[in-house]
Image (cartoon, rainbow, N blue to C red; front, side, top):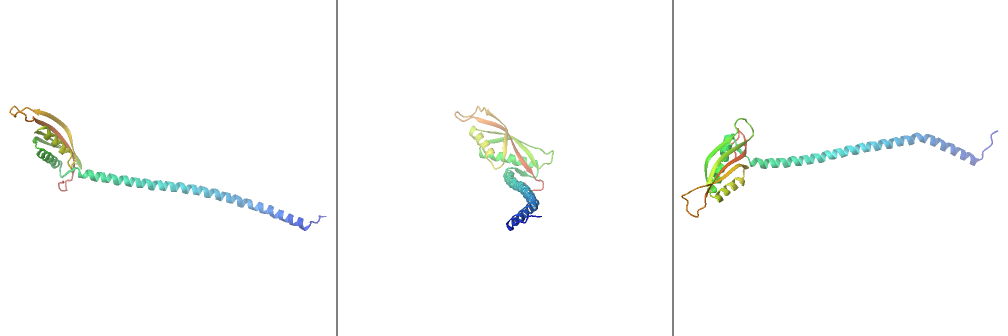
Length: 198
């Protein structure tokens, strides 16, 4: 014979059974929620890593663009400093004219002009050279060299030999005459189909 339960005990028993049933049924829900949370965290971490990679790529692209712009500006500046001609021989003649102008404005005399250029290979950029002797006084030679280096075109004095010229007929107190043998080099941009440059 089953003992009768009071209404209070019945309620407690029913409440306990419901609680046990809820706990048993909630276990899969809790485990699904935990898996969902873990998956969400993993996806969030993966998305954060992709975002960081994308941001680094954008920053790298900006840096590369800035570097490219700076290089283009430097190249454009250097381009204006090169002799530009249809042939290497014409570019060497332009360099010789540059030496002649510097000698004239420095009141020195230029002699023994020899032009050299590489005509063996067709290239866009070729070195050209001019060898010359200039004679004058020390200040004149100094002005000549200074004008070569301070012009708008990029030139380099590769060789320089200075010697004093003996002039027995020079008057007393006159400064001695000086001779400078120079080899001057420049880089020329060759554009066969274009006009002769500046």
